Image 1: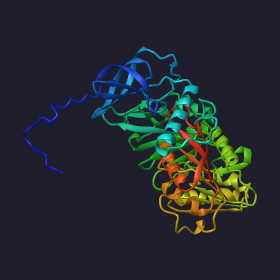
Image 2 (image 1 turned 120 degrees about the vertical axis):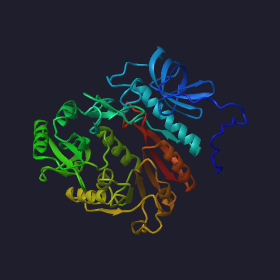
Image 3 (image 1 turned 135 degrees about the vertical axis):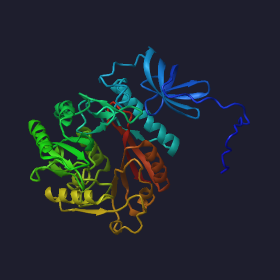
Length: 450
C-alpha cells in the first residue's frame, strides 16, 4: 500500500471528489422503494439514501446519521407526502428507540416485506424457488416479547443514570416508560425500573438489566462492583413487590438471590418444562415458538423407529418434543453449559432416548463421534452465521429429510445452494414472524433428498 503524502493535496484523476455529507444535515427526498431491511431507498445527486421510517412513494425530510462513499444512512423526521400504507406508530418512542423499525407499516405489510426478503435471497443467492410456499407463521403483533435487555449507563458529566433501550443508529439510550411489544407481566416492571435503579448507591457500577417472563418472572442485574446490603434490600423489595425472582450477575455466571427458586418455560402442547437461566438463548416469542416447534415436527414427519439429529439444540427446544415421537434423538450444541442444561431438561421430563454432545458446529463434522451411525432426518437451528460446514456433510449422514430453521435469510440462501449441490431439493419454505414491528426475518425450510 502506498504511503500517504503529507503536506500536499492532489485532486483525483477523475476530477474533484464529492464533499462528504455531514451527520445531522437535513435533506428533502422522494423515496422510490423499500430495502430488504424496511428502510426507504431514495436517490439524489449520485448517492443512494437509506432512510429509516420512510415508505415507498413518500416525500420526506431526512436527517443524516452517517455517510460513506455514495451511501447515506438517514432517518425520516418529517413526512410531507405520506404513503397510503402508513399508519400512526403505536409506540410513543417510535423513531428514537432502535427496537421496532417498521411499526409505521401495518402488520400484513410487514409480513409481505419479510416474505419478499426471503424469496429474493433464495432466488438471487441460491437460484431456487421452493416447490411450495407455506403461509407465514405469526401471532399477536404486540405484547409478545417475554425477554428484554435494558441498557443502563451512568453519565458522569450530568451525574444521571440512563435507563432504557438503545437509540436508532447510535449508542445513545432512550428512556422508556412503556414498551408495547413486552408481555404484560413485564410492563409494570419496565415502568418502575428506572426509579428503583436511581435509588442504588453506586449507579456507576451498574450494567444492563435483563427481564424474563416464563414459568416465573425474573429480573437480572449486571453489576461491576459488589452491592451493599442497602442496595440488595432495595432490589429484593422491588422484586417482591412485582412477584419476581432476583438474579445477580457479578463475577462468574448469573446466580439467583434465592437458590431454591426455579426458572424456566413450558412447551404446553407437549407438557414439557425446560429450565432456563438468564444469559441462555431462548426464543423471545413464546406463542410463535410453540407454533414453530409444531410446524417443524409436522414438516419433518418423524416416525417412531427413526433416529433424528438436532443441531444447535440449545436447551432442547426442538429435541425434547422430537424425543416424544422417535426412537432416539442425538442433539448437539456448541455451548457446554447449554448442553448440560439440555441434558438435565431431558431427564427432568423423563425422556431417556436423548443424547447430548458439545461440538463446535462451525467446523467440519468428519471426526464427530455422534455422526457415525447416520440419521433418518435432521433438524438444525443455527445462529445468524448459518451452518455452512455442517450442510456440506449432511448428505453423508444419510438423512432423507431436513428442516432448517433460520434467523438470517442470507445465510439460509447460501446454505440452500450447498444443500442443492448435496442432492437435496427445497420442498417448502415460509417465514416465522418471531419479531413483529421489526424487519428481522426468521424462516423455516424443508429439504428432501432427490
